[in-house]
Image (tube, each protein chain N blue to C red):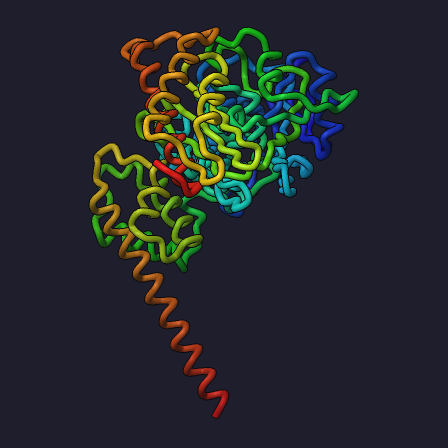
Length: 301
Length: 178
């Protein structure tokens, strides 16, 4: 491990986790795409920055027959070009500009936990787990539990502190490899210049007969809609797969209802879209995502 | 005692500098401009959204405003001034000048770095790939028409150069076979 007081550059996960644990308030640095602008915007200097660029273990990714594992140091650009994970790749391509995708990492997306994070929304939809370490042990837990463990998160990421805050180091995400398509759709201004207003990740697993969805940009953490997913799964003829024509619309209505009931809703920024519009748009986006996935799976609409 | 200022080496365009007492939280952009005086790397949005500060970090295109300077100290930083004198970089520079793809010039260094990176990786990039690949670079004069013309010209020049090399190689191979 190189570096000194205030900034260290570990080369192993154990070193990184121990460094984070040893200094309260220490922060992990991935690509810096959220953390460095936060500093510029006035976030206080932490007592220690643990730069993860040199930790090779975090750059690993792999695919088995039923799972994908992606190291926390894998960049969006690397994910975007990964043929084993087309849904994940689509979500990664939706992030920012080429410059940001080249630097931003999976671990950074989870550490920052932006409520509008493209990749975070897709990972929640995909039912991802995180592998984490704290210097004394390593463990696996659902991503949604890790997000909840960060505490009330209704405030923007910058107000909660810089990316990666806390002694827990996320080392990788593990997600099921679905037998079916995944899609990520978003609404917003120019992708490279602004975070999305809304994002929707949706995964169809034909083998398990399951639909999973998450909507980002409406609450502190991406909102799941289990009722909508059960409805869609019941409507789909999994032998084709096919659905009655009005299923995506009804599915969207149920997703909009889940958004309306979600805890910790995001406050509408001045001049931003009002909550009723966001709920409606979330439903439309979810309906389109379902239709897109079913079409890709060979059914209708 | 918490260190809030750091000193470290930083290699920019092949020259290794000694950065002294830089703030712990300083971006690469800030250190390049304010400590090393390298002002070809432009300072605009400081949020990674405009591409004016585009540089290569170990050969990868990034925005200098979103890179922690201390984290770049074991990397090679390449600015527009450090791009190669020949190859795609030369074709891009010539094409920008010949097409008049510069209005106020503020975005030009970032564009030249980004376009060189794109055409180095994807010499035959089509219109959509060019537009998508350069979405992170903004021209506030809105001079995109001539910028795109320059990129097409640079791509064509690269294709012509490659075709010339292939033809020369075929001639050489033919002569060797005789």
